Each structure stands twice: as C-alpha cells, then as structure tokens.
Length: 120
Image 1 (cartoon, helix red, strand yellow):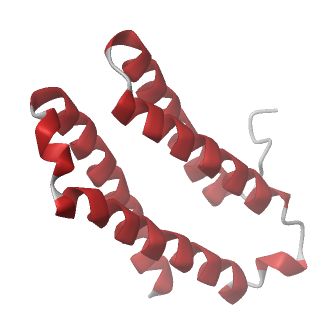
Image 2 (tube, one colour):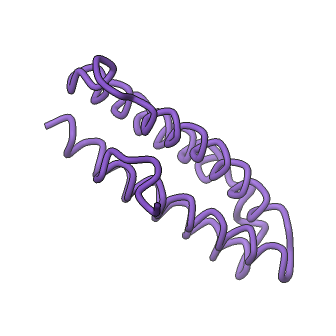
C-alpha cells in the first residue's frame, strides 16, 4: 500500500511540475495563485515521507545503501533545476527542464535497479 502511495505521488508531483512549467509559458501570473504555490510543497512532502517510510519498511539500510544516497543527491539537483526552470526564460529554461527530467529518469532507474552506477 505504501509503495502505491509513493508511486502515485511521484506521478502527481511530475504532473504538477510539468503543469507549472506549461502555466509559466501560457499564463505566468497564474503561478502566483496561493494554491498553486502551496500544493507542490504538500505533494512533495508526502512523496518524501512515503519514500523514507519505504526505506525503513524495506529494511534497505541494513544492506548496501549507496543507491539511496545517490537518489537523494540527485533529488537535490532535481529541485535546483526545477527552481531554475520556473524562474528562467528562453533556452536556459528548457535546458534546466531537460536536466530536471534526466534527474527524474535517473532516480527512477536507480529505484528499480538499486544500483547507482547502472550505466557502467
């Protein structure tokens, strides 16, 4: 059940981010709406809490947990790139967006493979 909650909030978070990027292009003033500012924080809080709960429920800290640290580090990069995406314009905005999507892809592959260096 917890895994389904986590996976659901991953999709909600991704949809929220992409929606805000689209909104920043078509109606940037709408990003100032109180609910649009608060909702992503609530969504991502639940996402992180469910992820941490899964780590403890799965007893993954008792084995090699370098992959969890890799996911956390890349999560911080994703957050930074997401902030840049919503604040920048032009080509830099889309470079930051592409980087954020690559971070999410990396996090997803690492979550499935439990290997931070799956590409080697």
